[in-house]
Image 1: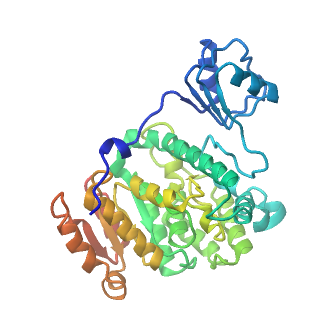
Image 2 (image 1 turned 180 degrees about the vertical axis):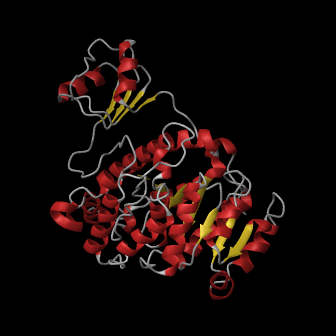
Image 3 (image 1 turned 135 degrees about the vertical axis):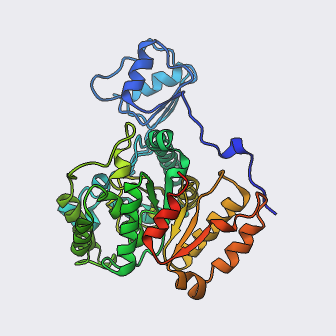
Amino acid sequence: MPTPPPADVIAPHTHPDEIETRAAFDRRLASGSLAGLTVQGLRLDLDPVPDLTATDVAGTLFVGCRFANREVGADLVRRGANVVPPFSGLPYPTQPSHLYTPEELSTGFAEGGFAGMYDTRVYTHFREHGGALPDVREALGQRLHDHGVDNALADATRAWLATHGPQSVVGVMGGHAVPRGSVPYRMAAVLGWELARADRLVVTGGGPGVMEAANLGAFLAAWPADELNAAIDLLAAAPDFTDHDRYTAAALAVRERYATPPTLPQQRGPGVDWARTGGLAVPTWLYGHEPANLFAGKIAKYFSNAIREDTILRLARGGIVFAPGRAGTVQEVFQAATKTYYGTDGASGAYVFLDRAYWTRELPVESLLRPLFAASPFGDLSATVHLTDDVREAVRVLTATT
């Protein structure tokens, strides 16, 4: 029987010796020493180009940095640094310094449609280089990229978690094929809208269907409910995600229409506005045939689907909503349940299942989940399971304790 790993293995860590911004780099450089630090993904070839010739770089690791010329990197190695340069020929950064934005993923759509988008170009490269089983060179590039996303995600969520705590992060799972404008889509959008207005960070898997709807609701949290309905009606003109160009064009049009909210929701700390204007999406290029979800405030896009799935569930300590879905959603139910049963990531929030009939008769996961949770080593957790047909009841359950 598996047991949870020790807490120090999975607990979030801060790494003060990692330098990820030019401002932080310049501050450390002024001290005359970069010894022992890790410098990640910086453009050190841009003005003002730093002079490193007299700087102590013993044991310094430069990962994915660009220098003015090759001799700079060679000189750093001669003086005791370790240099892992950016891989040439890759359409993605091997050490991204920040999470993706919808604008970045959709770059190129205006000129080349869905096929010309940055997001699609990376997916095409991914497929051409082995997909989920890449060659060694590609595998190293992807692993470095995903590590950079890990770091950027920790940086992006730090301010929110410091202000609101881990129990304020709510996951939303459900079917990717739910069409825009349908009843389940509208319910998920209202859910995201209500949660964001209640100071919850909405986290989804970054795909279409229920996931897009939840991020859409969070994106429009500052707007009245009738505008949310109007936005869904606009999107419903392109309901099917397999119609890639029309689907993406409709999303970009809605983003443009609602680009400037009338008022932002009340702020409770710096660096959290993105959480209240779209929340977080955590997609993967393994499913790059699906159009990018362009309504999240920040997007942590991974190559590794396993890392991506674990990351979503690790973050969602304030509960998870499961809208109707098929095999992928059921997998997520029990993957999350394993973490809750063993207390792997600490206390879990509620498990809210939208559509009582679906989850008790069509796919009766409740009948398995309740007895499993009742036998948890941490006591009877079966009361964390809730079934409802009412979005507002789901929101009340998820906001009752924090």
